[in-house]
Image (cartoon, rainbow, N blue to C red; front, side, top):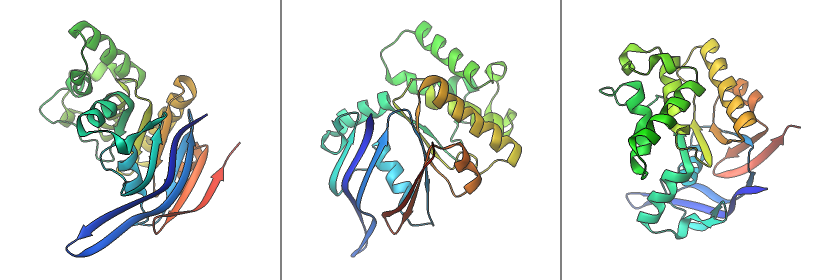
Length: 228
C-alpha cells in the first residue's frame, strides 16, 4: 500500500536573484513498511526530499501526499502537529542536547503530546530498551560513545511511534562495525515493527539493508532498484 506519493514535485530556492531548483518534477511512490535508500551526488536533491517528507520544508509545485494527507496544504500549526505525530528524524551528528541525560533527550518529542508523566516514562523506557541502551539512561551525551549516541538518537526518533522514520546519513560519523550494528537495528525496526524508513546515504554498503534504492541526479529520479 502506498504511503508516500510525490506528484510532479518541484522545489525552488532563491540565492539572491538566482533561482535554485534542487528537485524538478519528481514522481515517486513509497510503500508502507518499506526501507528506501536515497543515493546521488551532492546537490542531487536527497536532503531536500528528506526535508519535504519531514514537513520541514514545503513544495513549490506539485503535490506531496503522505498517508492520504496533502502535506503541502496544511497550515503551519497543523503541519507542526502532523510532524510531531508522523515523523521521526535521525541525524548524522545525533543532535542530542548536551545538558540532558539520554532519558531526557528521548523524552523531548513526547512533551509535544498530551500525556501523563507515567505514560512518557513507559514509552521512553520501551524505546531505550528497544535500541539496547536502557542501561545508559542517566548518562549525558559526553559520556557515551558515537554508537551509543546514535542509539539514543534512534530511540528519540521512534519514541512517539511515528509513521515514517527519516535518516540522514545515520552511519556517516561511525566506524564500520558500529555502522553495521546501527543498520541492523534499523532493519529490525522495519521487520519487527513495520516501520517505514527513508534513508539518505552516500555509502553503497548501507544500501544492502534497504528494499529499494532510489538514485537522484540534478533533482530527478534517474534509477530505481527494487530488491525482492
